[in-house]
Image (cartoon, rainbow, N blue to C red):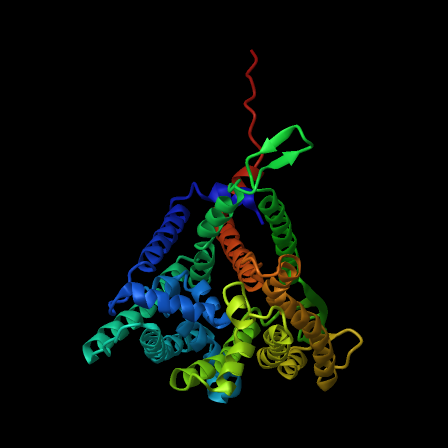
Length: 486
């Protein structure tokens, strides 16, 4: 990264204008995240949302990428998850449907068509998700209310549904406006802002616990007493060191890749010679990104959701109780209710299933997204080959072996990253008897690292463009004024 060039580019009015536009759009986004859905008593529904988030790891993930839209019960409650889902569906359909694959390969025009269809598909998905959220929250309110709660009227349904769908479409539009500025992906910036927006509250809670000296103060070598809680101080210190180590590991993991050298055969056409050059084919360790984690958490939320629906009608169902207890993500808020007898084998079911599903979905998504046979055919048509490997199906087999090895390491690493909250909770359970709510969100940190690197590269590229003329001026030698002598 050319940080000196980035700071220098801020003198450019066009660059500064684009950055200010993005900051302004992010400010508007954070304001919209606090506009409540016009549906009944906002406080009651907000409490229902809290219980929904605590009972589902997928709900916590959606709340994270929506910038607290779920917690605040705002019009951005659905967030950009419909657009993300539509993007994944269109990406899979592009590989499965030949006609869509032809359109996607039709240059900029084809990519615009695919993008437009993605936006259109996001609208019905937003409607379906909004209906599901309203129904689930209304049922939660009815089940938890001590008094009789009136049923929602058709007008209330329409207003709430319209507000939530409009919020999702508005968020999608804000992301498109950010992308048009050319210094980063708008949807990635929205996700980044959503995750970072929870940091002030986290730091405030840590500071309040750290400065709580009711249990004593920290003594340094017997001659200096710091006004901080000694236990919390060492926990925070270990937590900060762990975050630094994890971020370093995630950065290396995100940037890790296997470089293959591609040779192109020399071709003679008339008096001209072509080829006889070398190129590279980078293969990333984690080519699937966080999509396997999203798929796995969404898949595991289904059994718990089915169990909750059954319990709403039959509270004595043993099957429903087992589904909820086994497939609800264990954390400090659900630990006491789900495991009143302490740590049991049931606590390990959800983390183990999540780990296995992440590994499976990593292989599945990579196999669809990275077609080794297609790459081998393209190399053969262009006269390219890997040294020591025959073109054609031998190259495809060679690429598949390498990708499978990278997938093994990448899948296990993704699974380990997703296990970080459970590992930290397990350490606290062994040492203190219960989780403390101070867990490392590996998925959130991975998103932060990935989005930060992606957008820093975009800013760096833009900065090099706007300061390109300065390099020519700096490289020219300065003319010295010769003194005229008489």
